[in-house]
Image (cartoon, rainbow, N blue to C red; front, side, top):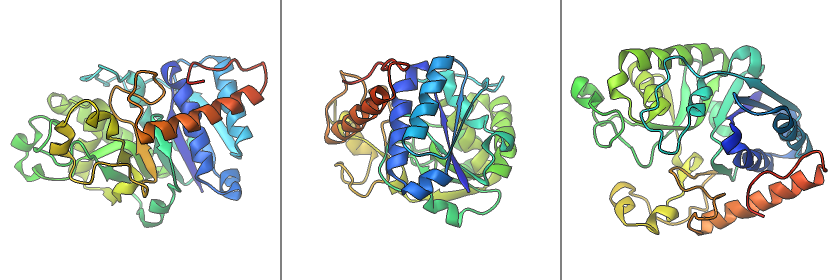
Length: 295
C-alpha cells in the first residue's frame, strides 16, 4: 500500500542507515514485509547502494529500490550552510519508481519512534500531508518566505509546514513537482529555506494540504537550549523530550551522529539506535566496511 521515500548522499549514508533501522522498528514484522523502501541519490557508489539494500533486507523490508536522480534545474540553494542540493531530490519520486499507492517521505536526520502511516487514512486525493514547522510556524511571523506576506497579505499568519515528513498519493507526485518548480521560477525572491520554502509557496496557493498532528514531526530542541535561550521565544510547548513524539527531527547544523553534538536525552537515544544499526552492518560481513559514525 505504501512506500517510504528517503534521499541520501554520501554525507548522509550513516544517518540514512539509522533511519531505515528506526523505520523498521516502528512497524510490525508483517507491515515491514509489505512496505517498500524507495531511495534517491546522485552520488552513492555501488558498494554503498548494496549496503543499503542488504540492511533493508536484514531488518525486514519486503521491497527495496534505489534510483539515481538529479535535482530540479531550477533548484537554488539560498541556505547552504549545512544543507546540500540533495534536499531537492524529495520531489523526484515518480509513480513508476514508487509503485505503491502512497508515498511517505522521510528526511534522513530523524529518529522514528512510532507508526507513521496513520495520517494516510485521512489523506484525500490531491492533498499533501504535512506538520507545521515548530521554528517557522506562520507566514509573516518568521524568517521563512521573506516578503511573501507583504506581496500576498492574505497569506499572513497562514501555517508554514516542515518538509521533513510528508504524506502523498503517489499519483499526485508529478503535480507536486511541477508546482514546486513553478514556485522556484516565478517567486525565487521569496526563497530562503530552499525547497521547503518552494513547497510552502505551492501549498499556500494550491490550498491542498492536510495538517498532521505535531507529534509526527517533533523537533529535538535540547541541543539549542544548551547553546542559548532563543528557542524559548519561538516554541510554545514545554521544552523537554516528548514521549508522545512519533518522530524526532534533528533540524539544524548539529547532528546526533557528530561527536561535537550536545549529548541531550534525545541525542543519546539516537546514538543508541545508531550503534545498534552499525552492529547490523558488521553482521552483514566483510563485504560492507563500517561507515563513519559512532562506535
